[in-house]
Image (cartoon, rainbow, N blue to C red; front, side):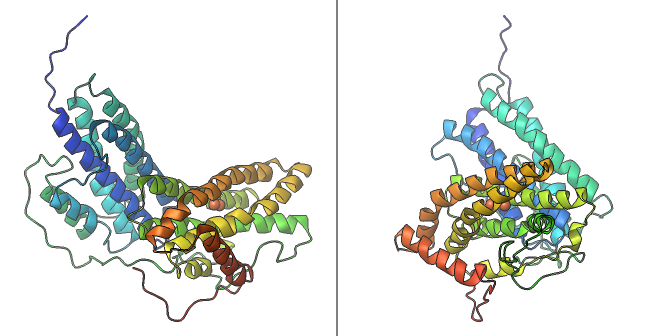
Length: 404
Ligand SMILES: [Fe+2]
Ligand SMILES: [Fe+2]
């Protein structure tokens, strides 16, 4: 047996400091992506952001599982004002392209390098659980960086990216060990972020400014028209992803378990949207020809986060099953395997979403200072959903409360 003489540079105290920095950066990246999802217009970016933010949640989860073994509480601030400045500034990007370039072309490549360095420098056997976490996180991060390299290949490095580079340098890099640069001045292009109360779509889409009801409400007798309607509706499920993203953004003090479940919830809805897009494409149809009913997001965003969560999980999601089961029976009977599989996978996800709603609503109510019994709140919110959503009214209040 070969006895290895320890020469590693990362001891346990330093390891904890580094893991806290990584956890913080991954968590804040998730929150920034959630905040920007409704504000981002380009559909391809929205779909990618759903995946990225869920994968960031996996990274936080890996780091959390390791951190809770070495410190209590597991989640701690990085105790570095310059690093916090970097991540609190990164949200104020001039536009969606700069936002993604800043996160994926400046911060993530540095993170990737730090994870690789850390993997070489930590005590290999004693710290094997950290190595395992970093090895798996690196797979995703390399993909995120490659995505941005390809996507923004023709986009020159902007003032915004240079600003984030300097903020990162001020923090001594990801590890904090590099020489610290001076505090940079923000570029003129910096744009203060505001909570998005409307959902952005790119120029290919038409916006439908009214509710069009569900398939039953539209009384489609023809099976083919009903099926087309169902998958056109899937191609609009970005609206649900955007509401979940907004709820994450509005709820910074919810426990990690809620953010973890909600990241999955949000990602699932972007996948349901993609499922609709794919189905249309497989039937020779263009998803951009389906008008997007962004008024649904605008209507939901008028309410506090607990009401929005209840409208979605106990209104839309809990009530979708009879319709989906009917669809599944029809597709199966007609030998339409593709549609049957898509609906089956959707229902598996939706059962989880309803369960998330049941699990987290009481705490979300408490954080929104809603004191009534949970069952009363659900009954009241479902009545609101029936009155204003199912009816198709989607009432927009004139005097909207600012919740940003
Ligand atoms: Fe969905
Ligand atoms: Fe859902």
